[in-house]
Every structure is written in structure tokens, then in C-alpha cells.
Image (cartoon, rainbow, N blue to C red; front, top):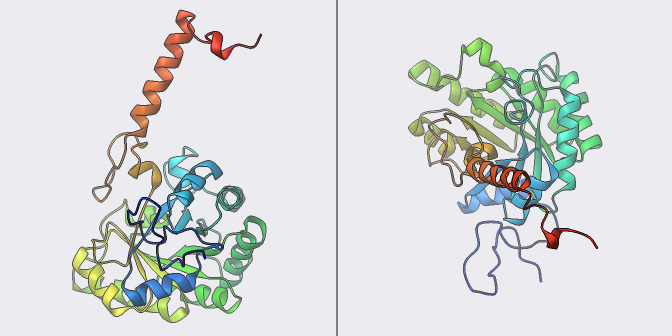
Length: 290
């Protein structure tokens, strides 16, 4: 019998697996995440933007993959997420879906694709489900986005909300400052979190929020909180994969832990390849047809 997503499988060597690490015959669903909240089980989410990388994370047991508009910064060469288009999100999301078998794939609604009206949000969210095959969408904003969330949920589209630091508002914020500091800001963030829950969101991302406040929000909400720069009290944690794997050049945010240094690995491999080509040692006989 296949293991339940909430009952991690024991591999043959007897070592315990991570949460949701067992093989299942279906994709993780929003109901599984609701049960995880009820059971006090924490889970990890990573961004993914292509089939190959998504497949690696899927095989590693990551239960939720976010096709973030962070692709604008990480892969498309933009300075912010603002220029990312719906067509780009559909293309990237479809690739991630094709590369995975069990992860719940959540896709961002990019800037300008939902702010005009709830009807606009429904039209574009439906594209991500119909054309890309994702299992849920994510949009930024608390109280201001509540009606859009309500309409999407009424239409049968699962919605992950995003409050605190919302990168699509970078120009309004004047950068990427921590959100929720001070009584008034903290009260507003809590109101935003409760508003998206009331609207029907199945989870909410808390970005760049003081850890104590994020803990209070997590305790007061019935839906899972997903932290990124929001401390350890959240029900789940998400990182941008190029940050956590050491692919990002220069400084990374304070909240990032780099679990590998793939930029150095790939750079070394590229230099070795170039040197062997220059020296005439590649291709060697074993790489040559006869």
C-alpha cells in the first residue's frame, strides 16, 4: 500500500523520511495541508520554474512547489517581479506540472493580472488551471484582495494568499522593508491575514515579518502560514530555490540559508570543460564514435 502524505514512508534502510516524503499515488492537495495544520506537522515549499528542477524537488519529497513570479529576478533577468507576464507564468507553470507527479503546484498571479477587478483575477487564474494544469494560485494582498479571493474560491480555484512584504509592491514600499513593525502595522497585518482566511484562502505566505508577530498570526489562524523571513513558528517555510541552493550571485536576504553552492560547482565544471577543449583532451576516445 502506498504511504499517506501525512504518514511518511519508512525507506528500506530504516531512516526516517521528511514530511510527505513517502511515495503516493496522487498529488498533494489543499486538504492534506489543512490536516497537517491540525496535526501540527510542518512542511517545506520551494520555488521551481522548469521541469528538470521541479522533478528533482518532487523526487526529494517537497510537497508544494511554487511557480513564483520571482522567476523574473531568478531566470528572466528582470530587476523586479513587476515585468513578468501571464503568458510567461503559464509557460513556466506548465513546465513544472509536467516535471512533477506528486507535489501540489501553486502558480503566482503576476502583477497586473488581478488588481483591476475580481473578474480579471478569475479569468487569469482560470488560465493557470486550464492551460498550465496547476493545482492552486497565489496572489498578493490582504484586505484589498479579499473579494478576488472569494470569487476564485467560489469558482473552485484554491488560493494561497500572500501578506507582509509583497514584492509586486516594491515601488510603493520603496524597496523590501520588513513589514508589521509597530502596533498599527502589526494590527493591519493581522487584519490582512484574517481577511484572506475569511475569504477562503487555504494558506497564507507571511514574508519579512517579525518572528513574534508571525507566531501570533499562526496561532490565531486555522489555515497554514508559510514563512519566508518570518521566523520558525510558521506552519511551513518557503525559499526561492536559487537562493537556497547557492545559485544567486552577491548578497542574499538575511532569512536565506544556503544549503549548497551550485554556482561554484557549475562554474568549476564550465572552466574545466573549457580547459579540456582548449587542450584538446576533450572529447577523449571514450566520448568518440567509431
